[in-house]
Image (cartoon, rainbow, N blue to C red):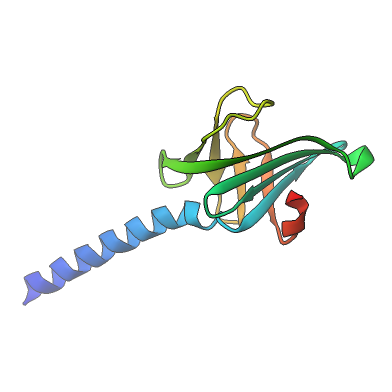
Length: 127
């Protein structure tokens, strides 16, 4: 009986670990994240299978400097780091991938630039 309890506990622990890891990337879906400096605002929106990425000139708020929409998939590197691989490369990116680090505060870091993208409730900011 003791072996069965230990076995169930191990299975439960493994299940929670696997669910928790895959849940990190899943929490991005349906959300919009922004990074803003003095003059530029970067907006990344994750739809079910499409990434919306926009760069806006904050001096002229209605002016989109660059915008891209592409299908994407997540590639897991570790528990918090993922590579977003786009089906089509944005003209303003060097590659078709974006390595991100998801934190526990509802935000993400761009691994290369170290920019911190905060989750926003404004889903219209992708437009």
